[in-house]
Amino acid sequence: MPNEQITIHAIINGEKVPTEKQAPRENPTHPDEIVGYAPLNTKEETVQAIDAAYNALKSWAWTEVEDRMERMERAIQKIKDATPEIATLLSREHGKALYDSKGEIAISLMWMEFACKNVKKVVSPQEKEHENGRTIITFDPVGVVSAISPWNYPISLSTIKIAPALLTGNTMVVKPSPFAPLAVSKVVEIIANEFPPGVLNLVHGDAEVGIELTSNPKVAKIAFTGGTKTAKSIMKAASETIKKMTLELGGNDAAIVLEDFDVNDEKAMRRMVISNFLTAGQICMIAKRIYVHRSIYDAFVEKYIEAANKWIRVGDPFHPDVTVGPVNNKNQVKYVRSLVEDAKSKGAKVIPLGKILNPELMDNGYFLQPTVVLGADYHDPIVVEEQFGPTVPILPFDDEEQVIELHNESIYGLTSSVWGEEEHAVKVARRIEAGTTMINTAAVQGLDVQFPFGGVKQSGVGREYGEEGLKSYVETHVINLPKTLELPYIPE
Image 1: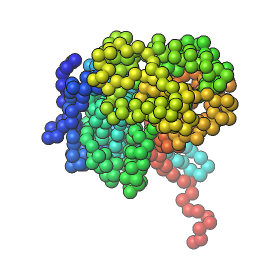
Image 2 (image 1 turned 90 degrees about the vertical axis):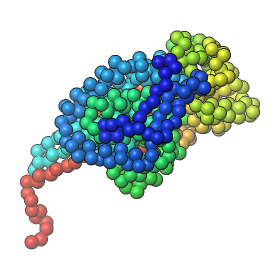
Image 3 (image 1 turned 180 degrees about the vertical axis):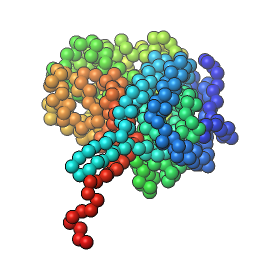
Image 4 (image 1 turned 45 degrees about the horizontal axis):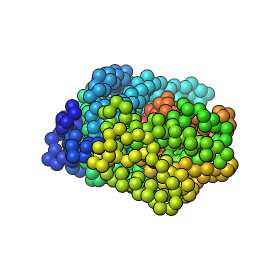
């Protein structure tokens, strides 16, 4: 596949739909190379996709859960079989290292398998006999779901929505990001082919497509992963018809390093580095700021740089030794670079990290050498904003009250991590405002699909993963059969 161009299509009611307008997707490693083309669907085509899902819902909602599970299990096997091809395509269009692309697919499959194994428990009706009669509780599909996924983990953050939605009897329209539309479309197509026409639909495009997906009255639920600013617009659009929403948004996740953390623990330090620079720092749940107790600050920085220089190897995603590839797109390069330059202009020290394995690519591709920033102010943009790139500030703190306040004053609260003696770290973690806090690890390394994931404050609404992630796609329906049909306190 190295230089093959891929053309993908919208899928509406089980058919590939040819589109007049298409958008190219370049290779971030070699921006002159076009990896493939995605359609620019229209509002009218988006309406057709929503209508197809709405019509399919009438029968799909009443299928047996065993049938849904069997279909999803067939799709899982086909994705497994196609993993080498899909991972290669993802690395070409995204820029993440090949091992990272394979890891994303592995996480996606892990979640899909968990959802298959647990959906029956979630949707099985409950029946209760009690002193007032009998009550039946059913867990019904919400309806048509609009799923909008981002570019940083396009496959994982699409399947996190697709699996629970279809398994619980909903139908869907999925819209990927134009910055990584190709590999995820292959995955959606594999899944869609295992389900009846209209159950899973796929569209691509710009603002008008997104607006239709979030405002159309036939859409019952929106599942969105992306920026907080966009989410605010989505919530306004959804308010007209009071749609259900699951929103996983931005984060400025902090790592808190306590005074009893062992800076000589090489494995822990490596986990810290990976939690900062995996996927070139372009993960919503990555550790984006590090607070270190002042008593160990100097020693920590020394050991951190040492660990970073061992693990970080920048270059072509297909180079077998590369751990960090290019940033996904030109705008992100500019944004991250502006934060680093701003910190430097205010007196912060910026230290380059790692080894560049393909120096000839650095000027032409969307590459940024990873950096650590020392001496920034607690409220500099590089500390309080989500960088979403390969740079991280390290700041000292004097006591736990101070660092907890610094953490919690953020408008975000997606994930966090506390590093140190376990019981001490847990005690601090209990006071952290975040959806998930990890102990002595962070980011994807500490993710467990068995448990709910999501943010507090402006980092999101609702939860994904775990049984709670499945339950977010059902409505609870109570059917009461009372013993006494007439109430004694109502007069004749």
